[in-house]
Structures are given as structure tokens and as C-alpha cells.
Figure 1 (cartoon, rainbow, N blue to C red):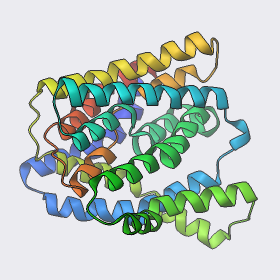
Figure 2: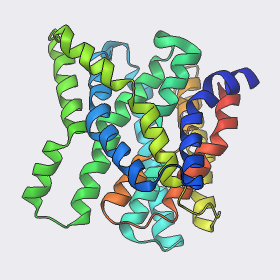
Figure 3: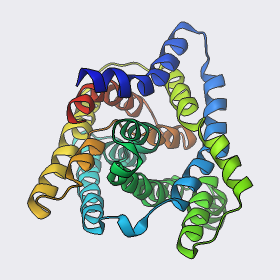
Length: 299
């Protein structure tokens, strides 16, 4: 456990921690971090997702296990939204994004690199499947619904913005190439690989700087959603797999992934649409910190 923590998990977490420390000491500013995050999101992340999509071995996916994971996300998200909206009395869009913090894992930029370091490319296939699912389905769902519910532009303009989103375009392009078996020219692949390697460290660093400006006070909302993320969601996945798919070899890595920290995209969407972040940001910070130990144990 100590070896996994020090050799595989902490080196990845270090970029987020470095950003947090530099933000708190004033060495890096939130303005600089937002610029870095924007470039990482618009320029570097699409090539990473594109490479992921074209390289997927869709025939190797356990569709039953993936369907169970997706169904669990729906159930847990619904419960989390209702808790935020009706028990904690948060606003509708904030409740929507708080629900997202529970089921949308920092899988692409955090869990995936860690599992590749520990298990290698082939053995990490279950995590790759979740990364593909969350990138293509879960993330797209929240981009589309949040933008639609924000209601600041006409529906037609909303659709145009969604159609121009570089992440969604990368998903569509990558899946199309994968399904048609089109041979992507090698120079394009080289350029995508060159750009994509900077995505995770830059995004985690920028996230750390931005989150450093938020209070870490564990309010009832923060405690509730941190617990839902780190305890309730992985337990639901574990029990669901053990009950409905007993002995499934994907159970361990599905549980490991579910125990990961909240993805930063809920925070990014909140900033983009003017949703309060006094609960969303601390949930991401606390889950990122506390998950160090649970991930080391589960790995």
C-alpha cells in the first residue's frame, strides 16, 4: 500500500498539490491558472480524448459490467441531486453539478494514469472502458444539460455551441474512425500524442491553483457530498457487481475507479455558467485528498 501510494499515486497528485501551494503563496494566480486550464481544455484535452477513442478495443469491453456502472451512476446521481435540492436546499443548477461531483470521477487525468502505472495498458482495460464511457457519455450529458438549463442563449445557439465544443468533436471524430477502421495518418497521430501528454499535469496544476482560493471548511453540504463520493458510490458499484455479476474480473478496477476523486469538470461548468462554487470546490479538494488513502488501499 505504501509503495503504491508513494510510487504511483502521489507523483500524479503532486501536480495538483503544487498548484494549490503556489496558489496559496501567491506564486501563481487564479487568472494565470484559468488561462492554463482553458488552453488545456480547448487545445490539449481533445487530442488526448481523440487518441483514446481511436485506440479503444470495443470488442474487449464487458458491456454488462459497463451497463451496470452506468445504471449505478443514474441511481446515485438522482439520489445526490434530490439530497442537494430538497434536503440541503441548494439551487437547481448547483444541485445538478453537486450530483455530478458524486458520479463523475477524475478518471481521464488522474485514475487512468495511475492504473496504467500500476497495471499496464492491457490489465487496465476496465478503467479505460470507464474513461471512454465518462468521456463520451457522462461528460457530454453534463455539458449539454448544463448549457441547456442555464438558459442564457436561444436553443439554436445552444446547439451550435455544443456542436462546436472541441471535446465533443474529438469524441465524435475518434469514435467514427474507430468504428470505420479508418487509418489515421501518422503525422496526425504524432501531433496528437505530442500535445496530449501535457494535458493531465497542466490541468491538475491549474485546478490546484484555482481551488487554492476557496475555503476548505467542511460544511454539512461538503461533508455529505464527500461521503457520497468516497463511500456511497464505490459501495454501490461493489455491491452491484457482487450481486448481479458475481466473480466478474472487472469488479476490482471498477470499484477502484469509483473510489477516485471528483472530476474538475463540475467546477469548470459552475464557473462557466455563474453557479456558486463554495460547496463544489471543497468537495473536489477533500475528495482529491482523502482518496489518496482509499486508492492506495484498493490498488
